Image (cartoon, rainbow, N blue to C red; front, side, top):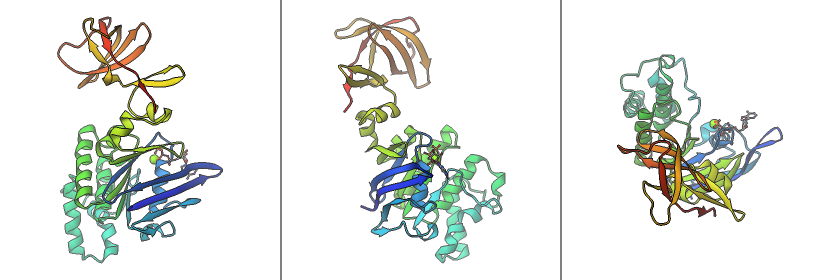
Length: 316
Ligand SMILES: Nc1ncnc2c1ncn2[C@@H]1O[C@H](COP(=O)(O)OP(=O)(O)OP(=O)(O)O)[C@@H](O)[C@H]1O
Ligand SMILES: [Mg+2]
């Protein structure tokens, strides 16, 4: 395995912020660390990057234990949650900073820097100062700076948090493209499930410093293992039947406008239009359900009577 993180444990005072975290990543793969705010995501990345010293654990990258190397000795690039750009330098100077340590001629470095800036949509920004950039532009400079050195391991901490929805999609594809082009093993921290679903080969779900589940996106969505993954990933209608937790995803509930075999009658209590989908809050004799449907011309109205086809699944 290209990256092997074992038993990583980090304390702040007497609080275990990262608690015995182990996971592996194949060369060229994209791992998303997903979890709520304060769950320890950034701390895990900082331990990998060498900016924090864990109390316990081992991190083997390409066969070499890296925990006793300094940050600059690790073949790793990090895009920090707060970008960490040099405010007194221009955009291009920021981008090619890492090439200084790689014996690359200045002219060549500038050329590579410009290429990367082009890729992240910042052509023509070379000579701007960092404080003349928007948050999203700074985020893209930070990305460009980490990509230009073609690291063995790329660590991204919420790299799209300041981008609008459209730009985020563009950047997401761009990062994926560059990552697979250069075969860069990437660890991507996010609290945005959609990002994780879209780009991850595997999702490492953490809560309160502990790993809850490691699975590919579809697996974690359809087969959440335990209560936390069920509650955190996607949305579910959850019910305890005979002491067992059962669930049904909103999109798995089929809504009919007339009585059909094996349907349950309900009334639409509330309708929330979300553009591509519509969310209905529906009351039946036994359940209060959330169901979603793709938008169409004649969506249901509040107080409409509907007939629902659905089945609760067991939580494994
Ligand atoms: N230097 C520090 N000293 C003490 N506690 C810290 C320090 N850095 C982080 N923590 C605590 O460690 C826990 C994990 O923090 P971390 O930044 O890793 O969370 P996160 O999952 O990245 O959250 P977010 O999604 O909000 O960025 C939090 O409870 C935080 O308050
Ligand atoms: Mg964080």
